[in-house]
Image (cartoon, rainbow, N blue to C red; front, top):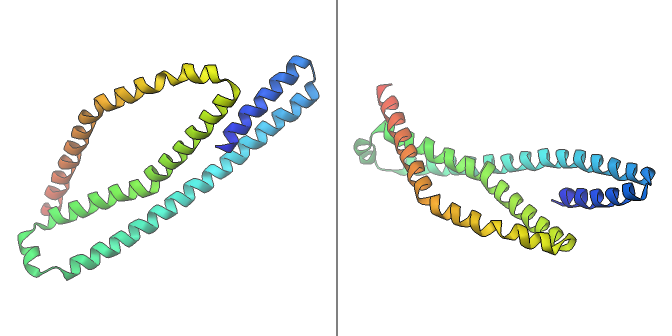
Amino acid sequence: TMGVIANVLFLRQAIKYVRLGDFRITTYYALGMIGLGALACVLSVVRERLGIRLGQMVVHDLRMALFNHLQKLDIAFYDRTKQGQLISRMTSDIGVMEQLYSWAAPVVVWSVLQVVALVGVLLWLNWRLFLLVGFVVPALAATTWFFQPWVIRAWRELRLRMSRSEEHTSELQ
């Protein structure tokens, strides 16, 4: 986030010095922007690795807790429940949790930080442009809200079909 903001500020200064005809200082700003881009790439890899590691640790703990819980269940539970259904449900639910902790949560946090920082910079640089851009946000939010029920239904139907398919496959083995 700070790299994006710094790049915007560097670009602003570089444009100012291009207009003044001072290409030596413009070159320094351009090199600074390249350096910030390289640093942003390195930090992005570190952030993704940390997010994946955190997700894997959480999922490992979840799997262990689930396994311990299944060990404590009565034998009658296993007589009533189909083996394929149980395996399918566990695999599906743990997969969703893994995606949530490894990818979704870090991306949401990172995106919110970027939006807040960029809104601040845009307000600081040009408040009129901020107001113009601000008109798009309510339309985007309304569109998201409008289509949300269909997306949720489609996702649930997809998970149900995947569960049935995995259940059938597990029972055949």
